[in-house]
Length: 346
Image (cartoon, rainbow, N blue to C red; front, side, top):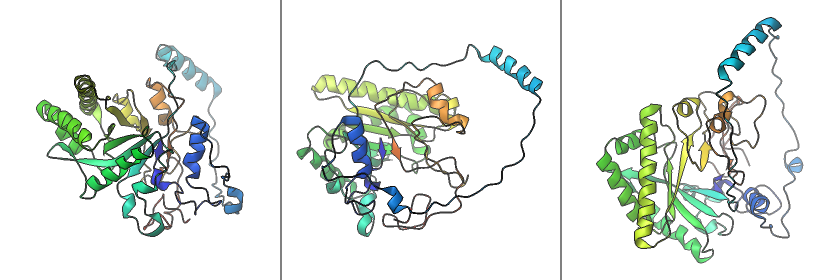
């Protein structure tokens, strides 16, 4: 999964070598066996980043702990948790590898070289494209701005070049918050109306499915509300497909990666687990790791420990960071108009 297609080097002028979409193209080649153009070359980063800046942090003195104390606590821990181990069993039902790409509805508003429109997408690059984000108006699925309807039409036109590409609409996101979802799911009639109106909305604009991004649920009440919403959508999608003989709408969901939310039970059959960078905490790190690092926070492993079935074919390439302390925001570059943790000077 890629967040987002409009943040790759889509015109081949930033990373060097004249290669368009170098990151996503490499993913596609590795996961799906689709070769890049014959003149495409991997970027020689050593030639681009000629210097390495290392910050030396003085480590505190080691704290000595008596061995007997450690052993006594270890024995107690093993005894109390031996029945609580969770083993993930890989899903034996193999599916074709997928490259799923988000497209943001604000990328076309960027000035200059950073401006990105649906026509800039290579239709063979991604198996799925998710347009982010729609919103709620009067508790119903709706365009988030007056340009969205036009963008929907232009995005759907990609099927003329690649009839197999699946195009979904995402609702929610990190800026959406929990309040609209809470209000939506607090009333069963209201939620059911949303579900069936959403089907009409998706069919009207010819989307292949819906991606629900309730990113900040908290506690048992939110957990149950989120699960109920997804259940209602799934049942309705299946029923509508049977009654109309149309392909079933795809349902995907984003779940939070925070310890609090996962401890409250936010888990299930998910398409991605994401966590935006958190500037107030002063941490920045790639969160979509392929392997667990020894120094990673314990919460990074919680999704797997909670019983989520791993999907080895899926890889999320994200621009958010988590874990390391940044010294300051980066200067605005070609793609961004303001300083931020994700605005390197290119």
